[in-house]
Amino acid sequence: MQKIFTLLIVFVLSTVVRAQENSEKKAIKNTIETFFEGLHKGDSTLVSSTLNSTINIQTTHTNKEGEKILITESKTKLLTGIANKKAEHIYLEKLLSWDIKVDGNLASVWTPYEFYLNGKFSHCGANSFQLFNNNGKWEIIYLVDMRRRSNCKTLK
Image (cartoon, rainbow, N blue to C red; front, side, top):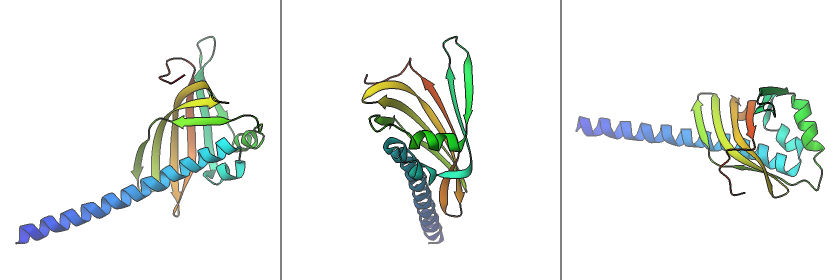
């Protein structure tokens, strides 16, 4: 009887832990989806609501000469670019998958993507988000993306 009781307790505890982890992953995914909703709409206020005040933003790509480049951007520049998005420009960053890892108040999210401008394929790559649970609110503290125009598995 004691073995059954012990197994029951282990089962209940593991179920509670999984439910909590799934809840955290949903909240993290919601933060990133809100970021992209703001990007697509050109709504810098919505994007800003997902960002920590000390966010680091970087992009990596290979230039025409084959050099690997790392560009660092400020939060202000990112938000200004989004706010100044031309109405006739339609952005769609299609996230192909999600890999979310959580440990306490830190999360890491990997999202391969395809980017379309006005319905035409532009480039592909991957985003790497680092998030911090700031007293109950998941905020993006670091964002780096990689961009390329070739070797993309896309529906061009």
